Length: 172
Image (tube, rainbow, N blue to C red; front, top):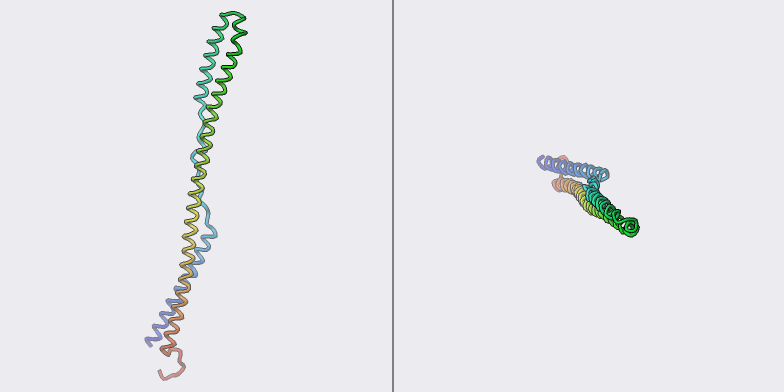
């Protein structure tokens, strides 16, 4: 009788392990199928471009031009005609410098955004790969539990067979 009880308990535990392994494997496969990649935000995308520096450059240039034109005006018509192209060229150069100042800020911001995008992509991929690896490990563990349960069940059946539990003779 003890042999029968032991065989039944061992077989039941083994079957339970196999069923548990199948359930765990199914859950892990479902989670893997529904796995979403995390969304991270780029912290540099919303950085504003400062126009303070370029505005100061333009204001100072306007003051300088006004002072220069006032000085030239006192020299008469010839002075104005001779100096005006230089004033215009100076204003153009200052406007170009101001634009370069803004372009430099835009370029630096774009590089910062691109670098942060690359960092975010790497983090998201690493997180995703870690999640996938974890779920694959759970699937593998479920498979191992199924096979261990089946081996245990077959072992219990073999033990019962060797003990003669399945013999149809009634002289036990």
